[in-house]
Length: 224
Length: 245
View 1 (tube, each protein chain N blue to C red):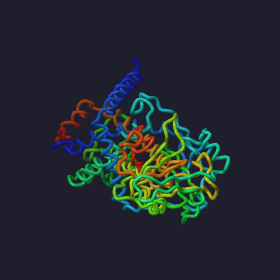
View 2 (tube, chains in turn orange, brown):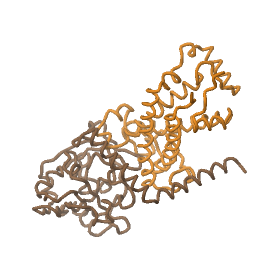
View 3 (cartoon, rainbow over the protein chains, first blue to last red):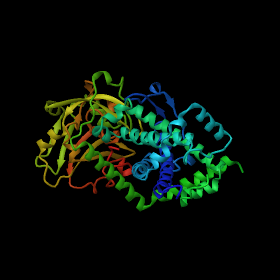
View 4 (cartoon, chains in turn purple, cyan):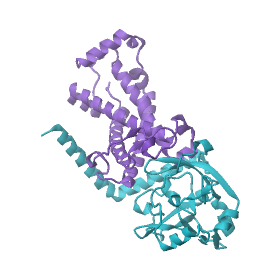
């Protein structure tokens, strides 16, 4: 049996590419107005809760300041990002990936078990005892797939004036348009932090094999 | 070599690649497709007459930020400013049966709508204000739109380095109940920084669509012959014509 289903592998790389484009074009968009506010409105320095640094050209798409071009990249890849996530979730529901690999079993929720998992992680030992993923992997992947990624889509939609007229409850749910914008920014950096940790852990644990498996599908080791 | 430099180099190479892709025609076709998809999704999910949210007087921002051009330094505008815009005219022309030239008094005598809405700038900030003015649909009905008219073009007194500002919208937005020719902000005549004496309110769009310092309204069959053909000053400079995203 393959370790990663084809749908998982396809989504993983489409999602990785869209996140990179969305993040870097998002930094360019952030440069257009480098302050964040809470509530419905905000435009002046004294209303801001955060003054954001200017992001340098090498970190943005395009590599120079252009709000128009950055928005082109952002609204195009928003579709690719949102639709691929939707299709992946449907596939993962159908092929049992969600039920089998994401739901933590009851015994995994015990404090001693979580502590043991954490200790193993810190010693860079990643073999799980039950199923494909260990507890920390299950919770962090679930957090990303079920909470952070959907939050990016919903807060993004909440900022659009056309969408706000169609579905006003979206921005109200986040406490106003400027709150949605702030949450969009915070979650983007949370996803950046996850990606750094994710890549680091792959590099520390059989990087070549793990990376190849995400292309070829790999094999589940029956003796484990 | 420092790892930081390698990463920065990689990122720079990636963004340079993106810049190449970004200049291609295929990319601009994809972007136009995405824009239409967003517009289609908004209309599908909300229906054509979806209304922008309206707020209560308590929600109004302490003042309303002005952006883009916040004044016009021409003799023409200064003269009108000196007379409190008493002689300002709004021309209605193009594909209409009865071209109009409306004086401010005539505009104030039309049925008025007052709405408290949120203004979202493409840069990211928002402000809430109360706008008063006739609905654009009232004016268009008075002028009588001809069959071939597909778009409404808004002409303005301001310019950027000699290039006049203009905007345009489709008939769905032109006849939307919240689309106003506003002459009041928060119960006062429109301040100069917000587009005195007349500005467009087109509530389901970002700020650049809300043309200020209006001098004319023109019904047209296509946008190709106007400005650089993209339907607005900022659209001609790469911004999306559908400003609802």
